[in-house]
Image (spheres, one colour):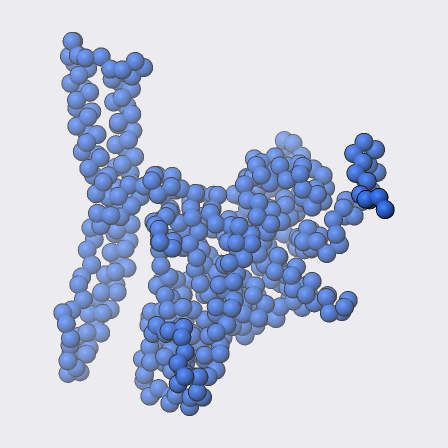
Length: 465
């Protein structure tokens, strides 16, 4: 019997379906995003209301295009523009129109309010579709380092900037002296003394600006550290007055001076050097709060701090009201500080807020001994007036606390894994803290719609089986 192949005919004109929706499978992500965005009532969009200039692309179309592109791993505006020609699903979203890369980039950059509004309304949509239940929720939160659109080699330290300033000043004096000499040795072809002086003066101005910015940051850091130092000294004095024995010297007072290794990046000054794995890169600290049942992101923000020590309170404050209130917070020990936990769990008047934090204070081994496998009695409750640390340790020793805290690694960590690996988002394209925050909102919005699409398909599968 002769071998049979599918007929591949590239010469006969193709009779395309009359409806672009027929080009894409009915359960495709593009259909879901298109329907979801068109259902949103968007009031915060930034458009030209004067009616001048060329016709504008509808905001819902551009938002659908951006969300789908980020959800499927296409981030650059030029690549998104090219996908409007290459990708059938994108042709559906754009109705076979082709916004240029400048339009796409401008829309993304200038619509922080629209993206924030859409983020909230997608969570409302999740409730309406009964894909999530909010109110009295348990959340897990964490931060991940996202590389900034800036090279660490474009940075300068405070000490190095001072050295370079002194070197440039000396070179300028040499060039000025050389210009006054009638028999001075000429420069290489194409180089002139006035141009070289101007170039060095511009570099001096940039370095002076860098040092001034580092000094400003040092003053802000000093104010925070001074408040913490005074709090520690007050607590130490109180223990001394109670007759307690004080161990070791008192806390070292902070210094208002910049540290020699404090850095400034010329490409993106708002980014910071942060440790990512075994290397140090220019990064932002992207924070996310995940509802444990639906695994939807219910709060997001971008921080410039290299660690999470002061991020618990502001990150929880980023939870959108439509999702709350929050009753349980699961965080790793990097978020713990007694002051932060107390601020989350108690009002200024000292009454409980209804929110309880679960964060480990002691490192535990992943290996479990035979004794660990045996059933253990519930630990005794901490004594009245116990410290915050004692209360947290007790919570994580109870059976309920252990089971609840296990949800953290099953929720927020996979979310970051999906964003970085499945969606492929590992570097911000926009520069500056405000613009990076806008882009992170877009990433979280794209993740949530992708997650809702998965939940919807999972709900349909048993019914059709």
